[in-house]
Amino acid sequence: MDAQCDVGVDPVTCLARHHADRWYLDYHPASHLWPLQWAEAGLTLAAAALAATAAVRWFRRTRA
Image (tube, rainbow, N blue to C red; front, side, top):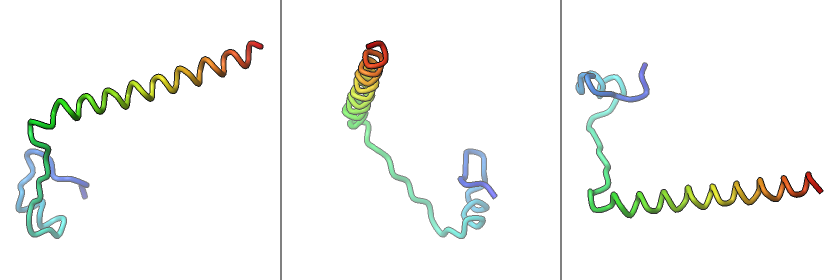
């Protein structure tokens, strides 16, 4: 049994297979695109900076 109903699957069959009685769709409006992109870029940049800082500290500690 599949975990999700993808494109090309008969909706009635999929609903019956998962014992569901209706669809639910949740989405972000188009106006959220760039704020979400910038938030994700900021989090990725922060994680990269943290990883680089940890690598530099580890490298300095092992070379001393």
